[in-house]
Length: 275
Ligand SMILES: [Zn+2]
Ligand SMILES: [Zn+2]
Image (cartoon, rainbow, N blue to C red; front, side, top):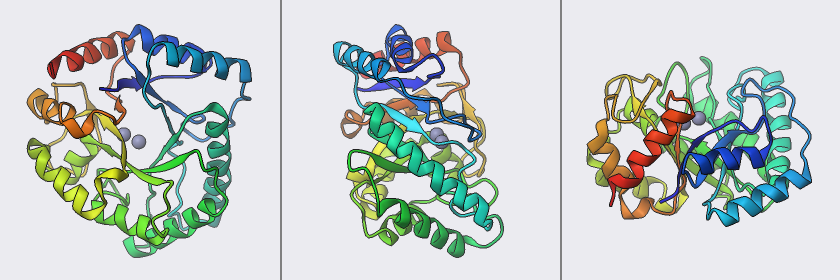
């Protein structure tokens, strides 16, 4: 099992790997730049090299970058779409240089234009990015809870976007247990959710899983993460997800409201739950 947490890379990639190794994790996620979309720091080739050596020594799985929350390819504003496209392209080049395969991105919010228009704008933007794309990296669309005018809260939305991009091989999906629960997918029967995902999208499209408990009940359309076992999902449901044989080669990332001590405790709990 590959399990880890969202951590900061403000002290560099190697320091992040050291932190995760101390937490006894073997994968992690970090923001590709400031989550509000600020300037990205210059990359240090020495740091990247040292980080990869350490990850190899510690037998890490695949690592994940997360795009800023300010990205919105579905915005009605040309300026917001333009900013998203420019920074997204830059993020992809950066993570390629960092040797990181995945960039998770929220599909976008239509802001009142309607779902059809919003999805069409996302497809238009992604087509442009994918036309000139570093082959080694993947954009992963994250399934959302459906707050406000958020798109991507059901598998059909994600499938529409991927089909609109002609099933580009570098386009995949990241699921989040809290978002799924908020969107109304009942994870107490994970087998059924898996079947539905496989039917609508194809299981191989799932590349990353965010593991969070949920503060609000099933179908609330609200996105508020809870600590593992302390929310509406509960430990039994979480166990069924992470112990599933089909989840063993998928990075499982905690984004629970914790400091590093809390993450260490959750990682230890989850590692022993399947054995
Ligand atoms: Zn996210
Ligand atoms: Zn998430």
